Figure (tube, rainbow, N blue to C red):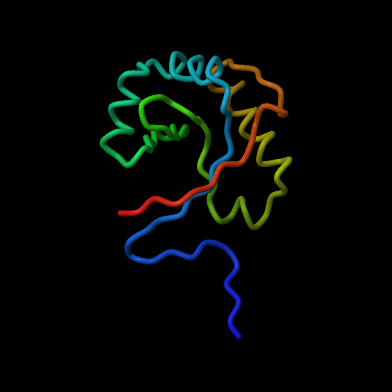
Length: 115
């Protein structure tokens, strides 16, 4: 028997895992700090299957921004515990955007996109 750990995908889908926030007020602060508009993010999400990757922040949603976070790579998933991953996200927001949030606001989000 073969056991696969991690994501399973095929040519018609792609899986993702990000760590971030659900809070509307904090999401709006991130959008403002990035000097973009909510409308731009929503427009980009609507043309990209509900995801807008703006480099260091990934926005997810449909008619509104429901989630803002950072995509995780395999090295992070293999080598860091969840608490450290969350703290790294909190530190990035503080250092880069001067946005301070409690680590308790940070959650994991995973899903699949069909192409």
